[in-house]
Length: 212
Length: 376
Image 1 (tube, each protein chain N blue to C red):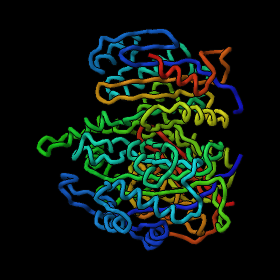
Image 2: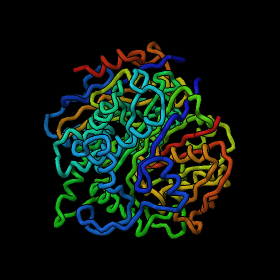
Image 3: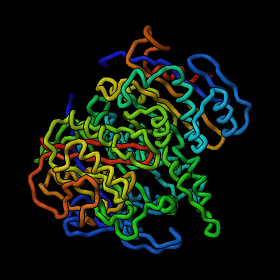
Image 4: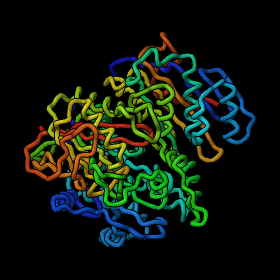
């Protein structure tokens, strides 16, 4: 490992709760994901009309990134091409795949739509975050049964070591029906004492990920 | 930092079940794309390059029972098996990682068996991992149409960083009603076999394929022409989720960063070249911005169609074949220049000594990727 990298912040969404950097910021009413997403959109004063066109995976990832990056001014701190986004989940885009399938299930009621189909790819959520924040850097989407902290830490460390990016948003954004969870981390080239929560490493990522 | 070598490979498409068969078919000008009128797949006839299920079944039944595996799995297993037969490297140890590149995996099961666990891409990857007794938890990369290039970039990085010594990378996608209906709703399917970079191009032709590439940290003694997978980059346009940037921003950055890391005079470019009006135009802009407008460019889409998650893998393999065998392949379907920044599009296959290739790709979500392959 060439440098020292730090977890400057995180946003954890699980069980209707939203935690940012150790603080509980919001608790949803416990309705559907769509209700929860809209409650968050209002609570965090997000104003972005494109949000309403996104699929559920897009909304979950986008909101997590909005909450994570709020008041951090990453765009002022780094050139866009040096900010990367490396995400993972279990169900890929199956949540939206099922919706697209409904549009083609019957020949007498056949209505496939580009607005749905475009979201049948998990990496589109990376595109949504990049468009909002003008990030042009490395993007990759991994599909795995369970979040794999040691792989993510190994992979991202070597990308930092090789100057692929100076700053990275990474983590897990998963939705399958009304089961959803998202844990995004902001990783930067610095040490714990300068900014943030912990030095970047498997134990720290794992411990934050498993927070209730 | 250590080098990453290409050790063995395979390509399965309608025109061949090995890399060599595919190269011969391309040289003979054969295409897998044909008009298909199948009410089960689409209410309207369409052009696509589909692997014949009977041929696939017959091939597969030579070594296993096809009834136990889906079409997707049969194609991927045939491809990995052929690539493994071409190397002596032991791949069942803990220093080997299996990577699956796919956009949709077994998505055709969504209609027949919507609760199937096999719909989960990681489950499909596990099945393949177990089939070949690879030891580590496999990795699935799903980055739309750059998946294959991204998988090669990622595998090469993991080896360079010393995290693994060998990566077996398979890229596979099948074409089902799911995918056809989606591309059709975008009005991005061609009215005839696709025509990359041509003036009359009007869309892409979808294709089925599977490709396997084995990357290793050491070169095998018998390899007369050692080919290296150099560093590559992926980027985002930060512009639109379903349309490429008008300035080619993301692709330009990916190419520019790749050229800075691999300072060669580029011998040829294997373009994404889907034959949609926007993609090819955007590529011409990005290639020109990078100062590569004189470099010979080809697209393989006229032979194989757009094979989605397989595309970056099989097109990389055929580009490596170009370097090994001193041959540049033509762009089937191209006749008259049809992009605003003129490129040097290969319209006949030519014998030529070449030492390197830049492979590029772009996809939905605004993603772009570039990687360099070169001889040593």
